[in-house]
Image (cartoon, rainbow, N blue to C red; front, side, top):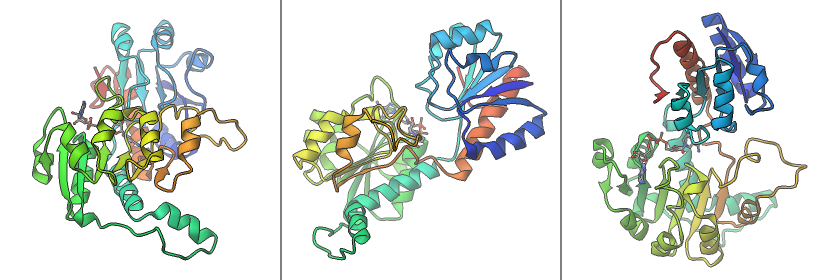
Length: 327
Ligand code: NAD
């Protein structure tokens, strides 16, 4: 079996080599994205694997099928970079990756604590020998009401993590589950915005979730309410969030993801002219914490993503089922 692996990061290579030996594979490895310019690397392969920056649109998928490639794996959880309808029509089998939700859940709680304990301005001060306390007074989690939007794997793991802090947990989802209901109380979406001191987003990016944080929902929030987004940048209308921060209508935001982060996050852009104005502008605020889409990034998760990516291609090539197949 021969597979072409796109967007290979150095931290994936050790696991790729382990799996290459285990399944006796021939692997073509490249750090480039899969597109019409690089698709030729996959000539003669049985399958291709990408991370989230390749755009598997109808054109690319059609070309893959013309090359006789009907197995495609995404080594990340999100699949909004794949035209799944086109893949279905072309009979290309698609899989995504699965990994423990606790890496993202732990990171979410870390961002919550960083926000409420004003860690960003405290860190700035430390670096210039300013050890004053003014303006750094925090709040205690125990006294807070935290809202979780999206109670799937990660949302539930965040609720489980938070249950040790003693805060009140409210949650909202289009599909309720018993685990979240045990840990918190399901309420309507607007009640989350109205009643919570901190709101954390854990839904996928869908038409129904795009800009679920917007002028209207922001206007419902408490004046010191805080938002945490470790899901997808497009869940928030960034213009509306920027206005709310500028006008001090909310207490703070922590974002591990950002609208139009492609081409910036996960790259060293120190000598580039960055075109994402919102990103550059929001970064300056003491109550805005931004990180480069790294909540998932643990050794455990990376090994699991690579394993799913390769083992699904092996299964598809052998005509077998795979548990992370997208149908
Ligand atoms: P999941 O599928 O287990 O859970 C998503 C939940 O969102 C489901 O319960 C679903 O019913 C709910 N949902 C869907 N539409 C909704 C709506 N309109 N309103 C409220 N709830 C809605 O997914 P997960 O594994 O928990 O991951 C959640 C998201 O986190 C992913 O889609 C991805 O975008 C993001 N993510 C980010 C990182 C990172 O590194 N920052 C890593 C992994 C995942």
